[in-house]
Length: 604
Image (cartoon, rainbow, N blue to C red):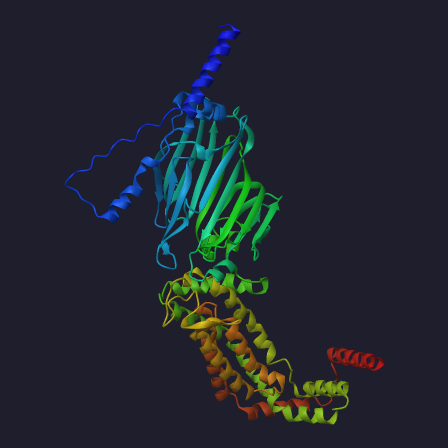
């Protein structure tokens, strides 16, 4: 073929292409025969007209030209972009995972044991709000696996623990080799394993990494959108064992992570969707934003690289509840998707409360009863401290006349007053902190509950008395206005907690020598807590309410068996015994510090 002939053929092909694109008429829509005997109402006729599919534009690009275009874009993968999308399921007792043959990708995840706040099926992921996109680097550029149609086959097997495992194998065959994606789901598991295998495609894939793009608009699963947003985080954990998170309160937060990651989790208040690498994810870029649409909690996105080793890449998905005992078995650090509190209280939740709660669940189904039992068990465990605290406060109350006498005698010399008080405490065998220290040791348990109950999925949608859901506030009255720092509803358990705290404070003030601000602060704190806890879970305020009642009962019982006369006799005995007792090194250092402080004050 000479140059002129080649030029002519090219021009002829160009004319045909331009004509087919711009001048060829679309096929005439076919007529629909309507049976004469059927008459539809006017409203239904309008619906039928809007549902007709014949208004769509008809693609008239010839198959030969479409194939040439695909070959130019996808190369050896061109045959994979034509096909029919089908769905395939993996299902166990916990969840249903729906896959699409287009991309061999996860399409939906339904958790079977849970419902949304309005009792609809709970989809942790779906095609409307979530997307995974795996991309390979080739000589033609980045190609998305979502463009390819896969063939699939399912199988059942048994894993190493002799548990039933369902698998689905997606295969995309090319003239050069195969691309295989295999997913497995074990019985009663929340983990979906994935293996990506490249067979004979070494020359076509130019980079030993797969780029993963994960975007998700987290749907509203709980009634309280504000609480849900406060408790929603993007968590990530490095291969070296470092945990971090994004928790934006602004419109947008993003972070480039240089360290290799072991896992990335999109964690809502009670549920987490996560990707877990067998080895690592590299060069991760994470982003999070708060949408204006209140039907979504937060928008999250992750871009990261999954290394391919020996033509294989392995990773897992987790789709499930934020149950501490479940999460800690998944992978190192994964239990951090549940906030157990700061380090000085987290040990109480991790090693005591979680296990105690799980033990009681075996025998009781009413979670209000479980909370009451937890209070009794903790109070019984701490009873020796409560008893010691009561006795310490009783001693301070009995020696109050001597303390008042010293205050009056040395009212113009605070330093001397403090020195004489310390001397008196040593003689009487009384410690000024003996009543406070035992109470201080109980504080980790009170603070631990502040983190445990708001994050406990076990309480989600569990009712007790008038509270329809112990994981949220128990509103008994919705106000037509909003009170600043309080809200627009009234929580009855919070009111009961505050009233019980005021009653306990009144009773406790009769047992102590507290005066002035210290005496009145016990009345102020319940009012503050009433504002703070009004929008917190009913389980938390109910726990504090029951705890106040039990503490009140313990102290009333101790009062019956502790004789003030005997305590006073013991104090007098100590006074005689220690009348010539030398000051301890601690007392001497304390007095020296007081003198130094007083001297410094006088110089000023």
